Amino acid sequence: MLPLTIIFIIGFLLPMLTVLRFSFDQFDLGTGLQIPAWSLDQIGIVLSSPLYRSLVLRTLSMAAVTTVIAALLSYPLAHLINRGPRVLRGLLLAVVLTPMMVSVVVKTFGWTVLLNSNGLLQSFVSDLGIPVQLLYSPTGVVIGLVHTYMPFMAMSLIASYATADPRLEDAARSLGSTPLGAFFRITLPQTYPGLVAGAVLTFVTSMSALVTPQLLGGGKVSTIVTSIYDQAMTSQNWPLASALGIVLMVLTALILSIQVVFRRVN
Amino acid sequence: MITAVIILFVIAPLAVVIVSSFTTEGYLNFPPQGFSLKWYGEAFGNDSFTQSLITSALLGLSTTAVSVICGVPAAFGVSRLGGRLGFALEQIFLSPLTLPAVILGLGALFVLTSYGYNGTFVGGLLAHVIVASPFVLRSVLAGLQSLDRRLEDAAHSLGAGSFRTFFDIVLPSIRGSIISGAIFAFVISFDEAVVTLFLTSSRFETLPVTIFSYVQYSNDPSVAAISSVLVCISVVIVFLSTHFSTKEV
Picture 1 (tube, one colour):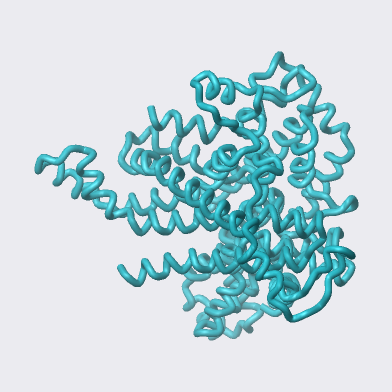
Picture 2: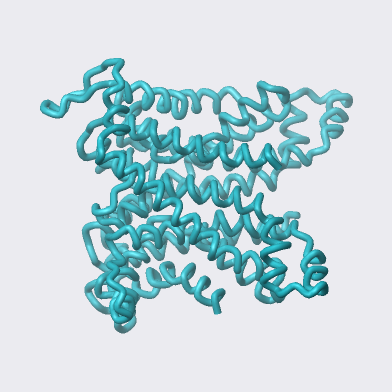
């Protein structure tokens, strides 16, 4: 146990504490120097400036939209995998799992080609008269986020669907309920624990995505995480990057606690 | 109908990368024109691609080795320790799974820079072990849970010491969990981009990071070719592992 403990102290505990410590430091924008301090200036900038407030809001709303779309797409998949014909099950499960083995960089690269302004999809959307730019826009980022993080939602829903008793649906149907009625009144409530678990995971992971907003946003769609990356690597403003990191950590912890509260209530 | 659209949505970006790597044109577009392997030649003739591929493979193998060598005894220790301390240690060792990778990358950048290890292979290895070892730990802990502890008691009562019991009884019984944890660790390290983006330098660059920078600044189909190679390696490894583990059980 000792070797891994030492690795975790140097590679995990120390980095985390350093991020926390640096978030209290000051940064001289003129000289680009980091000044050791115990101040709340950086956290203050993140929480009070309109720029960073809109950044936090944009990050949260893109994660929320991603989570909702992922849930809407995952329900039909979970339904077919658990209730559909046997032949389809293996195929659909493979479809859900395959993207999980592919690096997010490659998946996102595929989207940059597909969503390209000269591409099929963009001209299709424009022909329909929808004035939406796909690549380098929040729309493109959300498409990429849904694609990357939907498997978490799908896996969670598939698992909770499997525990829902199909005989209850049959009973509802035999008592005169329509298939949709049976779904909404009987099956859906039984999948709530899976939905909450999947939603929390999808929200948290899409909020922390770096590659997707960076490549599909093309510098025009910034989130908390892309700003952390820019501040740390381009501006070399480590205190501000750390403060943004602390805000991201707190948001992540808050959202993860939703699941704990939900479990207690049930 | 809805299902067909969802399947298309899931598969399309991967298919586009692979299909457009065979184009004869000089720029990326979909649908591509013609069929040629020339961009694979270009990709393997590009030193920065081959160098990153080698770095990624070496880093993946080293990460897997360290994660297994340190992770298996740690999992055993945690499970035998039990109680509050065991539970707390388990939570700490598994916490990189829920922590945003960007925070880990940022912290590792700070710490490695202050000790002069930023942009080095060793620095990258340390960060990758943090990201990958939870997968080994999780898999081995699950294996240990289904292990009958009376086997160890029997070995002890027959005179075997703790080391002998661990190597002769415990390790062989959890071989399957170790192998699947190791494969997970390799694929996670091989595909990792977020943490590595913070730790990269001209001397140390992994393939996902190289692809990331190429996609931003170039439109040349050799990126599609090298990406397809990356996808094939991951998929083949995962396929082999499922094949292997179904045989095992």
